[in-house]
Image (cartoon, rainbow, N blue to C red; front, side, top):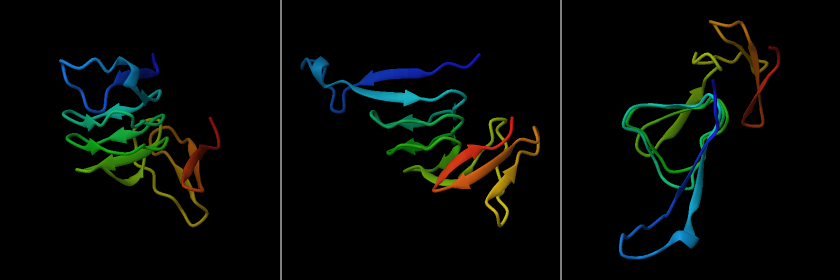
Length: 115
């Protein structure tokens, strides 16, 4: 079962200061994977089926299917819905090695072109 997760945070929390009117949303999309000890800075969103490597520090939004690692996290590729790294051909089409699903890279975003 996949769920969308939303968490509310304050950018500069202090226990003695009430800042409930300053909550910032963090969205984690369906199917996203967040590795152990990764840190998501509040207000940054993790797209559907994105993959955040262990120990990464996310300081900006991660697109759907994006693969990021490091501190700060940098995008190094794209992942399929089955968690396989996608390799794109000259036509910007990739096939998941596990599922056989095809993905197209267009304008720095991924579109699944068959189910």
